[in-house]
Amino acid sequence: MKIAVIGSNMVDLISYIDRMPADGETLEAPEFSLGCGGKGANQAVAAAKYGSNVMMLTKVGNDIFADNTINNLKKYNIDTTYVERVNNVSSGVAPIFVDASGQNRILIIKGANKCLLPADIDKAAESLKKCSILILQLEINLETVYHAIEFGSKNNIPVLLNPAPGNAELDIKKICKCDFFVPNETELSIITGMPTNTEENIKKAALTLIEKGIKNVIVTMGARGSMWVTEGKIQCLKAFKVDAVDTSGAGDAFIGCFASCYVKNHDVLKSMREASAFSALSVMKKGTQISYPEKEAVQDLLTE
Image: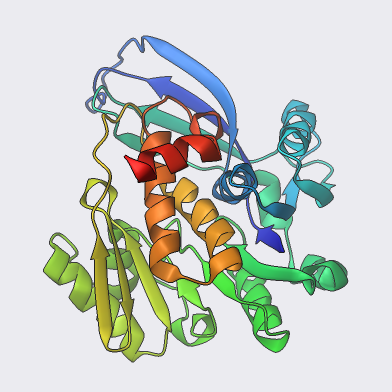
């Protein structure tokens, strides 16, 4: 079974800081690291590390970061046939700021990711038709996301959409053809225009999406766990308690692992539980993809 990730790659520029600077303030950051990231690439790596056969559709620039990104994907045995270079455009970059509590704030410069177009999906159509699920995010053009959803629907391929970064202009009618809609609580609030500061509010917000026709909403809630909302059913899973060092890429870790599990067992709750464990282990180390655990470590946590 093969997973296709249609989405973004970024170069992560991570600054570890004691606290966020105030307006006009300059602070010394004690540590910096450069890594491979982007929501799409993170999810692809997570799925690959959990044992899935993964292909990726993405675009890189013609700069010093391009070879590094492609080689990194190949390191995880991800099929890079449809990773294409774009001339005269920079690769995507993500400056990330991580404070002493492990919380993060992220900026993204899409760069070549903006050049991933509906035509690229059509070009890869025969390969995509062999996949068991399509994974999408919102760090690429919305028209490309909508085209991929339509492609999945026409070819009976399940589609998982991670609406990140949150976008209030998302066309709910077009995304109703997704099988799984997986926001975090902040993204859910942006998309619905409703508060999500409590579990009860999260339930109410998610149910409005179900009422509009989305089949399954899975909300990742960080330390509070995750919630699966579908018509007539709401189920919550508690998070695994760990000491968080860096939460960057934790949501992507959950999604990649969830997809990897789901295509094998078609059990949503079991897949969520394994994804929760994978994600929990990822926040115990610094970085995004380099923090993702081995499958054996996840199984050990699940059996403890």
